[in-house]
Picture (cartoon, rainbow, N blue to C red):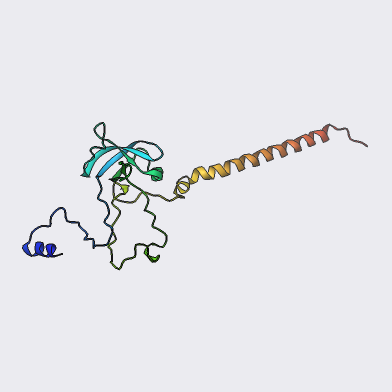
Length: 196
């Protein structure tokens, strides 16, 4: 704190290594991203997405980049929310156990109760709320949609078609069978000799 006051009095600009948001002692400091880039999805499997890097915003993609501008990011289950061929703003950190670049799309799940549970990371320090640096966003900075019901809303026409088309076929078949039966009974009555 005294360093910031001294910098302000002398009119100097703060050092580049100083954090933008001062984090008090006892608070968790988020891990700085290894690389931040804008890239297009070119390939995937069920948990890893391969990007072609358009431009690097921060950090260095080495040693994870290969073939010049391709890079793999591990998402786990969040990979399902990213669309092939789309361009995203990716912030990735090195996973301490796997040694791979990882990122996420959805918000991290907090422990049940959090600080309200007695003895679980209980502290009297007021920690600032810092956005998670390990996120993948749209290029304009908006969050990627992670709703479980969103694919249903996006496919309303196909869902209605899947429900209404079988019903229309069933009613059409019933109408055709009923018409055929009435035609046969009418023909039978016309051909049958009348008793007088």
